[in-house]
Image 1 (cartoon, helix red, strand yellow):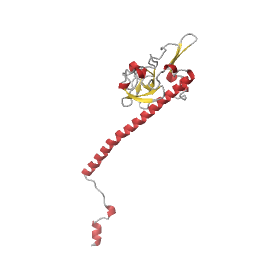
Image 2: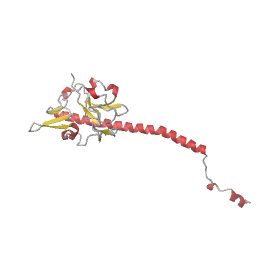
Image 3: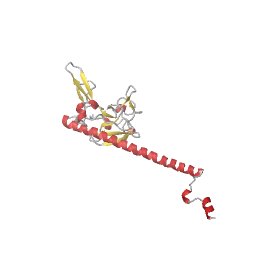
Image 4: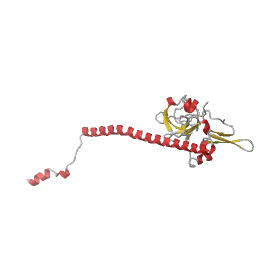
Length: 227
């Protein structure tokens, strides 16, 4: 009798746990709910990290500009027009100027981690101009010899005046502050790529993230040389 019972009733080690269809659906539902909660949180953490990195880049740019100003009497020039012996002008933009890059440790132009898919004015994919230098009412024209740059004595309110910002062009102007749509090239346009905000570096080295409503048509923010 004992041997017959043993043959019918398996030992506990041989028993298998079976899920019903309802239990399986409950597990899948719970996993879906957890994913819906966790994924946005992960995305938010990633955006905060990108935003922090971007602000660090801008801080580094303005630090380099301040060092440049201490040696030259004016901040980083947006363009430098060198006149050759035959009278032609050799133009050098700030992001490719060896003298400027020396103050940034000779590294390539800094790139915002959120600026992933930019295009130039021909529509061609490019590394992009992640940051633009503010040239609103800065003396000097496109073809004028010398540097287009703000002198230290001309920046009256360094804590409220924009020096650099997120952008899709390497020079930015107040008149184009409302033109940003995506990461495609738009002449002189600031970029609101951080959840609708643009990161801005001020002349005193401070950094702020500002929405479009506080940037567009704001001469106190844009005008470098007070008029």
